[in-house]
Length: 426
Ligand SMILES: [Zn+2]
Image 1 (tube, protein in one colour):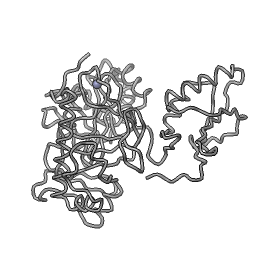
Image 2 (tube, rainbow, N blue to C red; image 1 turned 180 degrees about the horizontal axis):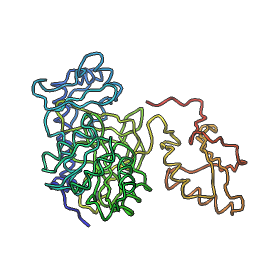
Image 3 (cartoon, protein in one colour; image 1 turned 120 degrees about the horizontal axis):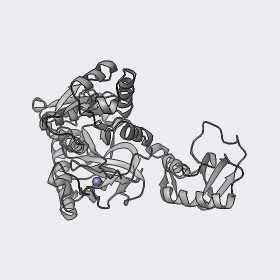
Image 4 (cartoon, rainbow, N blue to C red; image 1 turned 30 degrees about the horizontal axis):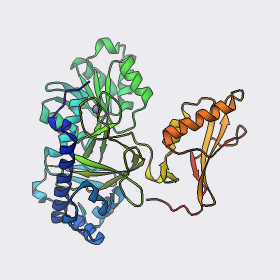
């Protein structure tokens, strides 16, 4: 089922999309090199000149930039660390990100991704919306600007005084909410404490939640019990809103305002769709502060199959862990999140831990577990575990060990790397 889109560019044919990304990447690299001294210095140090970057694949030639590096650059050379690429007197707005990290914004173009996100949420001109994210930060600023651009009615409410917020939601017929899922849940519970019947007494029926992970049980409760349709949004604090999940709920659609790579930590080479690696973003919508291969530190994987919603953009799966937590086994990265997903289907198991070791020249993956139910058919259970693990982690378990209850401590790492040669990644 197709969805109503904000802009035809969201459905551009794949060949055209590839050309689009190549062109945008060429432009941003050339522009940043010519105008942002810190970008030029990094590229010169890597021995790369802009004409070498012709396609998105060529991004592999360029160094990555981390949040910590931006903070250091800004500290050494305040206020923007040589990353500002337009005249300071032409700036539109500043946002802040803890660090401190200051992000200059060149024009409302930076909010274009947020415009698409709000449209996907279901918000339209004239709709009154509670904005509980502070607009000092990217998440609040971009949606505030997107609402202004598209004629929604913004009520910047912050996260204090829930009773007043519930009263406003009721009295002003608020339709949408933007903020964290936790705060939305607080508002709904508060409304109940105040004697309201949420579904009957409120018009609130859609929400953009971001700023924290959206847990499936929270989503179910808010959607089924309270009739609020949730859209999961993902942004990064450096002036880029990555995207949102559409009605299919199968990954985060990456808006056309950036190109996302999933790469192997350390070598920073691009990985094929489906493989887990570090997420890098190259942004196109804020020339004032060009972000090229910005590393969020999150692990994810790409989905490139067409989506029934009609958007042709690639998607990324949810955040599957942090770069430092991943462990490489036989050329594939596995993360604690993947192991947990594999285990979640097997209630007979209580605690578990994956140990990666070295046997000769080969990686050995051992799955230690404690059983919650000792009476189960073990052979059948081992088969189920093996198959669930391979589905989620794409790696085979070499050995399954049932250990006595209490052997695995309550506070433990999900994956332990016992290989002595292991080099710490990023
Ligand atoms: Zn979709």
